[in-house]
Length: 285
Image 1 (cartoon, rainbow, N blue to C red):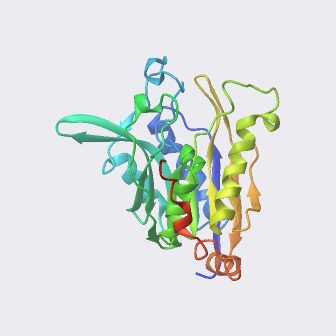
Image 2: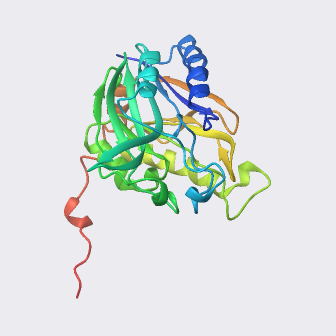
């Protein structure tokens, strides 16, 4: 595929899974009308995100509803995707030796099938009260090329996206439920510290790995959290090609992904020019 059209979604998704499943066809139809090949929906598309970052289980609405990876809810979105590649997030229910646990999970689907999954590895603040941590980052093949996925706080750690790039990913889908600062609130979103970091991480991860990054996010308010939006598509130079700002909508951009990645790495290839031996931690004296 020479040219690929990518879109990050900024939208509000709450606790009502059935309402979300009724809402998604309209979003996917809008993306199809714009020729989108890869659509990245937010973290916690099904069931919404936590309502409190410190003690999520104690919030009035409790934890998001958990669903099975092989359950009807995930299958419904996979069928809706048709020939589009769609990434979305949800609270995944798993059973381990008779006990039930949950992960904050991203899944990539197309044509009724699951192409890849990612379980959030880095759990900030009280997320560990709600989710078990994943333990790996892995790229996988899709009809739109080799792809990797991150879930919001994962992108704070350069090693996460570097692992995906070393695994051959030319696109990273970063699914977010990223709120405005809860400790240093600003009257204007553009002045919010977390809004700045959200964009900074997206651009840095794309530029340092010389690949495309498609970033989605929740919007609106859930519990005590106000979400930033700011869905975007970033190119291998770290330039934002399209962005929604704080409003809901699609950030859509078209590019020759493989060609642009190859051009970015032609003279300064960050992956090939690493000096691995220099990165070892110092030995104790």
